[in-house]
Length: 265
Image 1 (cartoon, helix red, strand yellow):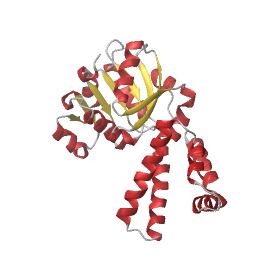
Image 2 (cartoon, one colour):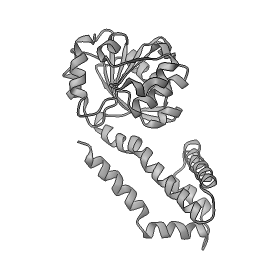
Image 3 (cartoon, helix red, strand yellow):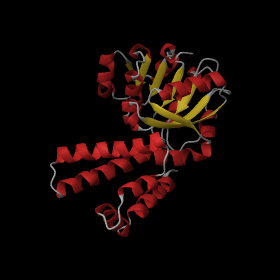
Image 4 (spheres, one colour):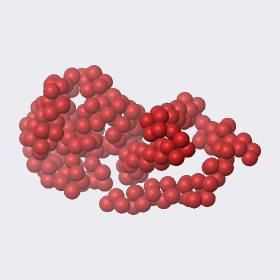
């Protein structure tokens, strides 16, 4: 099915849900086919203005859709899914959970038997169509896999993984946005300390980070090989890198990643 003919509901349209909605709309997906639910719909007024259906009734959104994306909090996803399970038809609906730390078995037990089910983890860069979304699935056929992949491809890139890696994917891909933002903030602060105003420093740093990522993406090279190209004997680059490492730069990042992973229930 062409995704522009598919009715999609995002249940629980918080920050991630809004990022996904914006990614869909920016790709040309018709607003009239997108239903968004939230308890406080006033926070979705921009989407209502674009022509999306904005609702507080999850059941109504489910009935009007073929693809249901669960973007609620982990602590209430089971109750919310149980409340709409009676409205889900395995022959009509595909359900996708983007909820952190809740496995497919826990959720498929709530649904009618055989409901095509996906677990996906995009990140907030879906807002600008630059997410990486990791996906796994159960009870899904080739057509349903293709549709879900197409939906998330509108938001950026996708990769299919085994479910046992989904928590790790959450940390590296979704939490990773925050790690990179903190790194960028620190670079901007350093730029201000050596003489730039905040706006200029931010412009230089964000383009530098984008360029570094593109080098790796386009060339498929290892970060260390690109580092070697800009480090010269007794130069300022290697001096700065070594000072960062003396203060635990790489180890602090690795420890942070492991701590986030261990915190997922």
